[in-house]
Structures are given as C-alpha cells and as structure tokens.
Amino acid sequence: MSETKRNQFNKREDLRKERLEQERRLKERMGKVKHKIAVISGKGGVGKSVTTANLAMALRWKGYSVGVLDADIHGPSIPKMFGIHGQRLQAGPPGIFPATGPMGIKVVSIDFLLPSEEAPVIWRGPLKMAAIRQFLSDIVWGPLDFLLIDLPPGTGDEPLSVIQLLPEMDGVIIVTIPSEVSQIVVKKAVVFAQKLNVPVIGIIENMSGFVCPKCGAEIDIFRSGGGEKIARELLVPFLGKIPIDPEICKASDEGTPFVIRHPDSPSTKAFINIVEKIEKFVREREKLTKTQVDREPKDEG
Ligand SMILES: Nc1ncnc2c1ncn2[C@@H]1O[C@H](COP(=O)(O)OP(=O)(O)OP(=O)(O)O)[C@@H](O)[C@H]1O
Ligand SMILES: [Mg+2]
Image 1 (tube, rainbow, N blue to C red):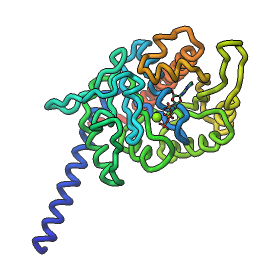
Image 2: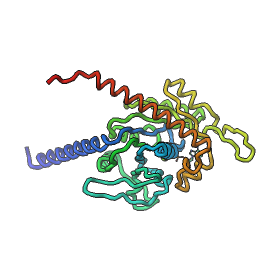
Image 3: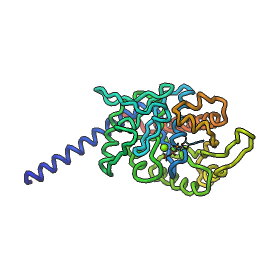
Image 4: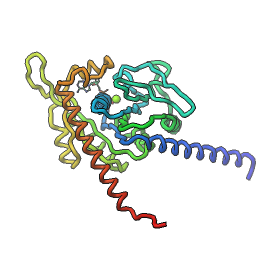
C-alpha cells in the first residue's frame, strides 16, 4: 500500500472510531432519560414548537423532570418561547450542560451556539449531520423522566437523521392544523414514523377553533375536526385539540410559561389532557417492554 493510500485508510479508520465512540456516548447518556418523544409535523408553522414547549411545562407541572431538545437547526425557537434566548451552554470535563428554562426544565438548542440572532446556520449535508451527532453526544442531560424533541418541519432528511441518531425513542407526536391541505401532509408524517419504526403516540390538532373573547362566538378559522378524522382514517390515536388562543401566541413571544399563567384556560386544560394520554401511552409501553423482557429466555449459564 502506498503511503498516501495508507494515510487515507488511517484517516477513515480514525473517523469511523470517532463516530462509534460518539454513538456509544450518545446511547449511554440517553440511557438516563426514561422517555424520549419527538414532536413532528408534515409541514412548517403548525405550532410544533408551541406544543413542545407547553407539553414540557405541563409535564413539569405534574412533577416530572423534563428536558427539551430543540433540534431545529435553521429555526430554533424554543429558547425564545422559554425566555432564555441568548444563554450560552456551560461545558465541563464530562461534556456540555443544558441551560435551565422555566420551572427547571433543561434546554438544549443550536440557538445557544449561534453567534447572533440573525446568523443563519449554513452547514451542508454530511457536515451538518456530523456536527449534530457530535453536539448530541456531548450533552450531559443527567436523569430525566421526559425528553421532548422539537424537530425541524417536514419529513425530509433532517428530521429523519435526527430521529435515527437518537436511540430508543418512545414515539412521535404529530402536530397538524385542521384544514384539508394539512391532512394530506399528516399522512406523510405517519408514513415517515412507520418507516423509521417509531410508534405514533398520536395526533394533536392545533389552532382548532377560536372563541371570540368579546362576544363568545365560536369560529372555526381553519375548520375543525380534520385532525380527528385523519387519525381515525390512519388508525392512530387522537390526542386532542388546542384552540387558537391569542394568549398562547403572546406567552410564546414574551417567553413566559403559558400553562402556569393561565391554569384555568381551555388551552391549558387541553395540554393537561394530552399529557394524561402521553402518561398512559408510556405506562402501557413500559408494561409491554417488561413483559417482553420477562418472556426472553434466561441464560442458564
Ligand atoms: N394554538 C395557538 N394559538 C395561537 N397562536 C399559536 C397557536 N399555536 C401556535 N401559535 C403561533 O403560531 C406561530 C407558529 O407556531 P410555532 O413556531 O410553534 O410553529 P412550528 O410548527 O414550530 O413552526 P416551524 O415549522 O417554523 O418550526 C407562532 O407565532 C405561535 O405563537
Ligand atoms: Mg418550530
């Protein structure tokens, strides 16, 4: 083998070993997180990040330890919604420590690594994935009950790669709006999850109906019931509807915890209801996993 070829071979070997080491670290660190749930959508702007942030707060409110991973590389919005935009991540010998959001929620976002608010992330294909893999494997989450992952919109390469990187996901939650056009993309999201072999925990219909605060009239701005209908058609659970609520938008823009500020609002009740369904899902999944482990033949040694 010529010297150049040998050098190339050694370089490839080093990269392969580094990658395996990152995957091992990622697995070990994620092993301390009991439940990992990704929030996806067929298309952008349907309220994925709002849903992730509020479900995280509702879970925390119920007493769980919660982390949020904002994996949206090009439009990270969780830090702003949690009022911690501009924070920097602390690094120590074990790795990178998450920032702390409202109620002690642990937060990691690519936003914390960007030099300025306007700076776009211009990474291309493989380089981007290498950076994400490295970033994810370096995070020291510590023990957590739930980790919610806010993924980039759509069902393209990026959300796919992130889900493939994260080991042993409990499932995905699909967010949609009720209109006909977004129902078509919900199908795509369900197929996407099935292809990845990740269970669909259920569909959430966001921006579902609006109650006029002045006259109390109920108006279906994007129609209503579309999410429920598509869930029935695709045989996946329906988790609930969240109305259009100007207070949700205001709280997200101001970075304040909506469910704590408005504990009695219909939207908070909707989030709590959804959390109860998530709890039921993970309980049943735990039972199923336990039964499978019990059934596995024991090594008689
Ligand atoms: N139920 C709701 N009531 C009122 N406003 C809402 C509601 N859900 C989302 N919004 C607002 O709609 C906008 C889009 O929401 P969000 O950023 O969560 O969408 P997204 O699906 O994460 O978008 P992207 O695909 O760009 O990541 C935000 O300004 C948010 O505050
Ligand atoms: Mg978003």
